[in-house]
Image (cartoon, rainbow, N blue to C red; front, side, top):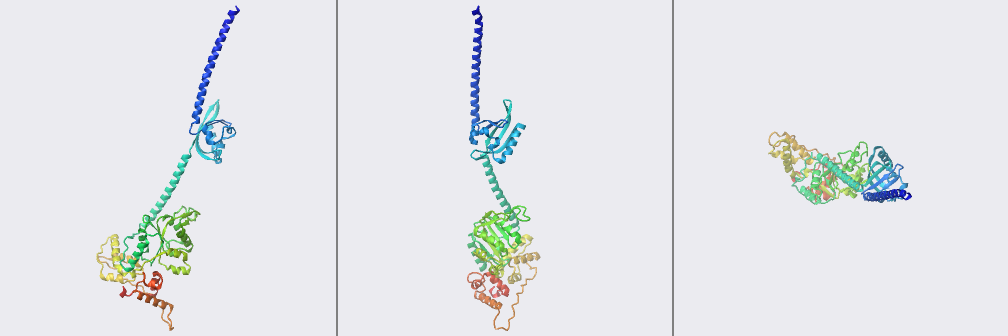
Length: 504
């Protein structure tokens, strides 16, 4: 009986053991599956292109991938003592803390931040973080991507944009300048003049133009100094860029420095924006400084520095700017006399006077008056809608007999007025031309000696007679007297000396 009663118990025990074995086998298989899945998940996380991390509420890093350790350079043993902000530069700590609060409050966020490695290397990242639950507790799970290459590309783009903006500003400045210059009509490719003095000027200009050397153009007002400057530039290696002009006599002393060298915003009252100076605008081109003798002494030193070293500073800036500019200067003043009076720097005069070019006044090139008159009539009549086909002989004789103190500029004004007043196709002067009366020479005294004034006049006349009244050129009166042709012409005007008709 006892044996028969034990059989069911043994059978039940065996069944229980079998069930336990099956359950153990099932759990073992499940564990193997979980282990395989965990291994596969670890492989996936470790091979992600960026950092993966999970922070709990303490906060403590409870999960991370291999890439996280590689980028941060910290080991897993060091993580338990670290806060989220420890991985970033100090100035971003508040932003990191705010982002963490935003994740727990709103469920997710995206943030750009600069990760700092254990060795101090700064690596820009973009992070995406979400709130999730593990063991019924909220955690922060995130992913970070290294954006160093993108940042480098952005820096390159910003640099390129800055260069493009600089070029744009330069082009806009050139367009503004050219918009002002377009009002002027310059036929610099056809300088009119067949007289010997003009042939010498043209020859000198052809020798000077291909060089990059500074040029000084000397001559009275209205002789065409700007026209010659444009011709030199047009025949130089810099002709692809515009000729930039500054009239040193047209601007007040407090503005000409800004005009030449530019200024930064706020450099002085009224400087509401940065201005590009003419030296910066003329980089790689030619700068024409008209009426250089009117440049204030305090700016002459800065100009000398640019000519010598190619360096200058904008007003309101300590940054040294560099420029490659060819300078052509012009003046109707006697700069040598200004140097002696202390009105012009001697070192600047020598620096500017490397290649001097003297332009003769119109009264010294009377043979050029007929072709000049024809050219001026041709230009003016188109603008005024008139037709002038004839120039009476007596009109041309008056034009050639006049001394033209205002030179070609005065001739242009006289011809334009004549075209306006001409009712037929024959040129008629608007008013008779009257030569200005020369200043009276002092009356000789009872002294047996001549005054210095009289001696100078006599000496000039002797030189002119000896050179057949040729003022300029090798062997001319100016060369004989060893003075600048412009200086000689000024002395001739002072003494009322005019070329006799026999030498016209």
